[in-house]
Image (tube, rainbow, N blue to C red; front, top):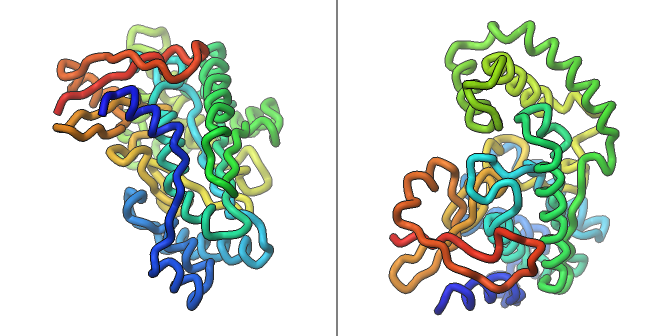
Length: 331
């Protein structure tokens, strides 16, 4: 199969899940809630096991939705800007396309067998990117706009009983107020910075250096790296809201690809990757006659780029510059 046909089928073909005899018996004898849990817990799509505390929450959330006869609502908080060291930055690329296609497949059995269906909402948290990782607002806005357009494109290729949404953190919370709360938390984190072990401090510094859109030649580099760490940790503390996070409401189950312990189901971003789609670049691995979608981190791309070539693709409109071609990795 040629690359264009493969990608066209991946995006346009709507999954039509066929229940097994085991599925039907499970629903009949154990209830649809157990069936839903078994599909969310599928090792085919998960990267690691659900932590016991979050598994308990997932079960409660499933039962709540089933008892109230409402859709199972999954959320994906993300990025939200393409890592600047990637050749596709600042726009979306095939990583975003692959991720939506995979989660559509992951959730299609539930949409097929649960009368109330499924809602999948991608939640952009881009309100903090400029302050945390020093991206330009124009790059953040471009990524945000392209991702929203991609969600709209996929609306024509969803199974019955499957809703796909795009939301922004700022739809529910005021940016200025959130940043005020972040600034207050930063003062506390700054005061307590040296109370962290050297190992923890170094790990945080490495992560910030990897994510920030600055170089060592920039004025005040070390201070900016610390600022990035504090903004990141302040955001993760959820100090910016009195309520639960907008992706973790009572009826919502969260999906994540990295650092998911205790707050999300750790799923793959593609079948061959767990790299965040906004932190990586989508590519195809050509392994014999098999074509495998993946998402490469910057480090992975740098190590593999000598074994890649770019191939043109005519599937999306001109508004998606990075989707007019794709990198093929020869295994």
